[in-house]
Length: 67
Ligand SMILES: [Zn+2]
Image (cartoon, rainbow, N blue to C red; front, top):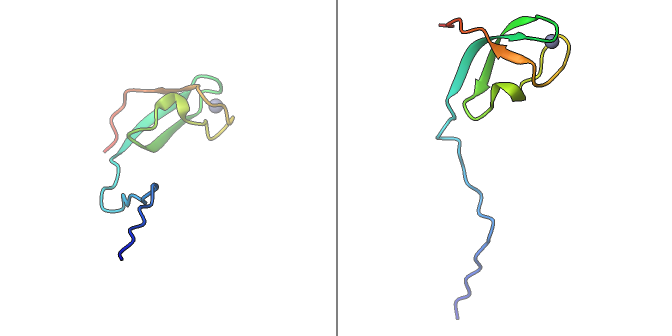
């Protein structure tokens, strides 16, 4: 008799599908720090932490293009 064990939580490998990343220049509206941020496309700007003051939700895109 063959017994099949189905695992409910099958690991999904995403290694071969890297998430596209965005590069943009951000400015913190709290401390005016300006920095270049690289983030996965799924991460919103308002989820980013300011590297200087450490606040989350103050980052704004400056609109400058990064190449
Ligand atoms: Zn800041």
